Length: 100
Image 1 (cartoon, rainbow, N blue to C red):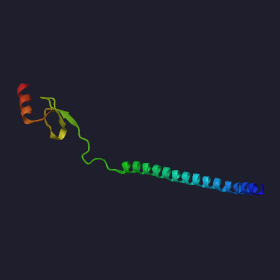
Image 2 (image 1 turned 45 degrees about the horizontal axis):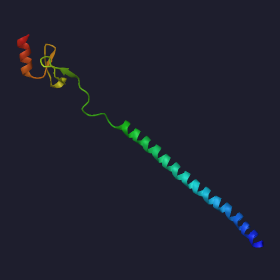
Image 3 (image 1 turned 180 degrees about the vertical axis):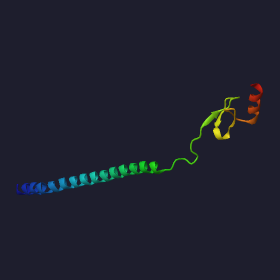
Image 4 (image 1 turned 90 degrees about the vertical axis):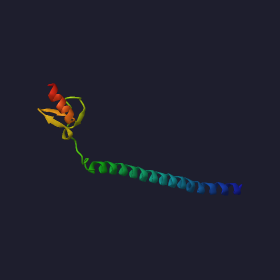
């Protein structure tokens, strides 16, 4: 009988240690998850900041015009302008002048 009581007393003393180990493991898991969450948030914030700091493309935007003869769209810098109308080539410029 006394042996049974000693065994119960030992179990009573070991139970809190087991619970403490479980709680310590849970705390460790939450700590790791918290660190991973902080890392993920900081990484996404850094991506946003890096995107904002990138300079705009060097080429920039340019107006597009339509050829009065064939209807092809081309950049204004590459077009030929005569009488307020834009053309894609000298041939189309000549053809338009002859026809009209």
